[in-house]
Length: 346
Ligand SMILES: [Zn+2]
Ligand SMILES: [Zn+2]
Image: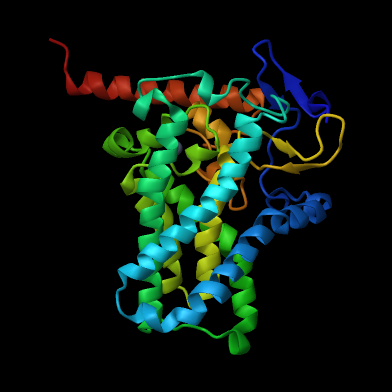
């Protein structure tokens, strides 16, 4: 595909989309976009997460549900192997084709450089890829697995703030809740993410994730353990909301397998090369801008537009750039005024 039909490339080779980001169309009355929005909402990413969820449930968890009622390290080990294997295949194939083999070159790539070209002391072994890979498999995936086993231990023992619901009786609410899973994700992610951008939490916790200014698939789960715990605890809302374990598992899988979306680094992933016309939207741009500018886009793509409501939305346009700079200047002024108050002139 000709990426210049969809955006522009600067002198350094960095590509930017031609149209700014928009929050979900129903917030802006863009009703003509609703059909497109609904299709993108379901296909292909959420359909993929649901398929993965059903495979986990019917092949692994449901047949062994009784075993979760007592704490079992065996199940921690089994689920770790499955989670790690799933991530290795999914993230690994995008990494392999688009970052190692580079089958698409830099077409639709926001940052023209690849992380492997930038060795840096901030990473373990000076390598962003190796650092991000090790943190994913030895920090984040174990924490994800522990939260998963704790959740199914609670379920197998009947623990819930209200009640576990069955599909036959409560199918309507459970379908609505399933459709709301991405919205719950955006709210949980925005709040937890905003929190770890504050003061000491940023310095000691979230800075690990932000070392990857130019993220790639392995960056998605490259986190400090505190951040991983906050990130994956999203599933635990289903111990408070009347729910069903399949919906909770969908919440967890769309968090874990969906973490890649913000870190793909390409606007579109082509399937049939430069001459073809088949490509998949990555939905990566909002979070790419977060990695580039840090204090914008704490949430997702504006399904629940918290960034817009709190003044931290960046849609990629020049206007948004100016607004962001004005916000940073005002913050600097406020800090300066605070400091001069704290140290009175002699
Ligand atoms: Zn990120
Ligand atoms: Zn951040």
